[in-house]
Length: 106
Image (cartoon, rainbow, N blue to C red; front, side, top):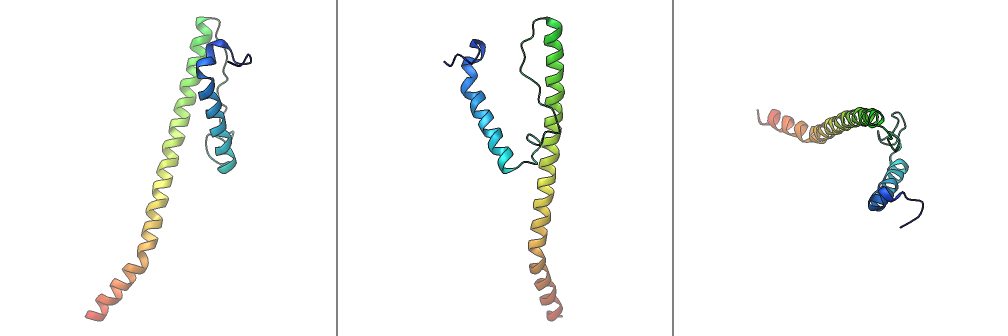
């Protein structure tokens, strides 16, 4: 293992590296994405030396997780609404032709 990686994280170093690479790619491709736009501070990776520090870190992480889950839910809802809107727009010509055909048949 690399000496720059703390021994307690050596098991996860490949996952940490690939996650960092994925976030860098996401920020290049989609800088407005809620994980990349910097509006929400990512909790720092720190070593808790007391139980109180550990509890404080856990609360920060729980809050961050809640914010990110809320943003992801909102993003997915907006994406689905946009997809439905696009589907309805694509059906407009078909509906117009049906209406014309129905009027012609009368």
